Image (tube, rainbow, N blue to C red):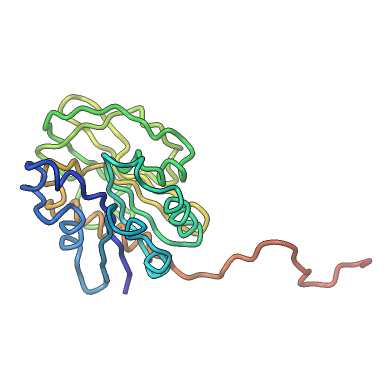
Length: 240
């Protein structure tokens, strides 16, 4: 059983009628319900909860954290960011969605500005699987087509991905590295681009399939625990 926490700042849903119409119970609930299955145990957390819902206990019992944020990146406490960062290095998986590219945690893990071009024009997005053999792309076919989405365009100021799984094309002509994996410490990170709050992207079956696939990929595998610091030799050292 993979223990998943879906984190959402949950502000647009309370202040924008268009968003609340699309996601009446919040983006976090739409994602939770959309990826629910026998192999996941899912909880949600939001910005306005004590410690943003990400207490030490919650994170210690989270195998994969899904992160959606936009309006309130600056309101996420540095203490919580550092807490999440430490858990990723220890092996917790992290899936960063859409405007989460500007979150404190993603920028801390990437070490860059994570800036990009954008345009909200409700244009078609075609997300091409450029690494179709990758487990995150399983079952989605050659591409995912979304009729209306916000455009993100290059240059995307991120480190070169360890694996590039998806590239997006937009009706306005731009392209974007929209599915990127990274390894940090013992943890695995996946950035996935689609998910503007005024569009029903998190009701799209293939978008949800990718997120579910990413959860399975990012979950800790519980291999040998790294040992650091001064170490005694395993063999006799000649002359010692």
